Length: 250
Image (cartoon, rainbow, N blue to C red; front, side):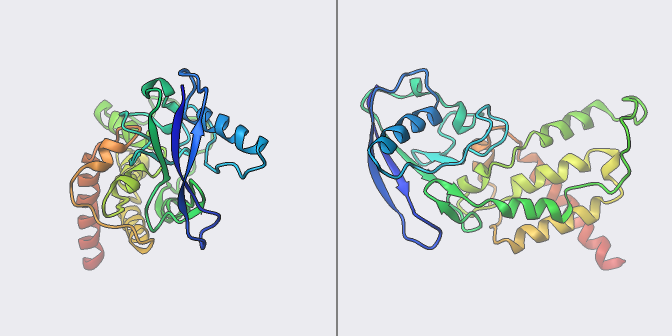
C-alpha cells in the first residue's frame, strides 16, 4: 500500500509550522496508524532527515496519548477508538491522508504532532479526588451502591483524558472531560462530602485555562474514543448551579 501524507511540522511552540508532504510506501494493511508513522520515520532517519514527532504510549487504546487529527477528525472518523487502534486496511492504495495535532489554544503545540495537555492535569489537581482515608481494600459489599449509580460512575471513569472532545469542539470546550471527572466521583458515596467544592473548583479551573463554553452540538461525544455521554455535562451544570447557590447563601 502506497500513501501520500500531509503532515504538520513545527519545530517548537514559538516557531511557525507548515504542512509537509511525505510518501508512505509499502505499508502493510495490517499495520496500525502509528506503526505506519514508525515506518515513515525509519525512512526519514535513514535519509538523515528529522523524524515526525508524535505522542504515544500504550498503543492499546488505554492511555489517550495518541492525539492526532486524521483528515480533520480527532482519532480518525472511526467511532469509539483511538489513533493507535486505527488500522491501515481502512484506507485505499493511493489515498492522501492529512495528519495534524489537536487544535486548541489551551493545548499549545510542543513539536509537530505533540501538544501540551497539562491543562487537564491542573483541572484534576483542582478537585478530582476524595479526601478520605482509603487504607486497605474494603469488602465489596460494605458500602452499598445502586447498580445504576455504579454503572454511571464506571462509564464516566472510562474517560482517558485524550483531549479529543476539546479538539472536535469549535469552542475548544473541555466540558465533556471535566463533567466525566466530576460525575465519576459524584455518583459514588465517597464523593458526596466534597461534591459542591469539587465541581466549583474544577469548573473554575477549566475556565481559567481558557477552554470555551459548550454550545450543545455534541461533537465531543461523537469524537470521544470511549463514547462518554453528554448527559454528564447536563449533570455537571446542575451540580455547578446548585453549588453556586449554596456558596452564595453560606
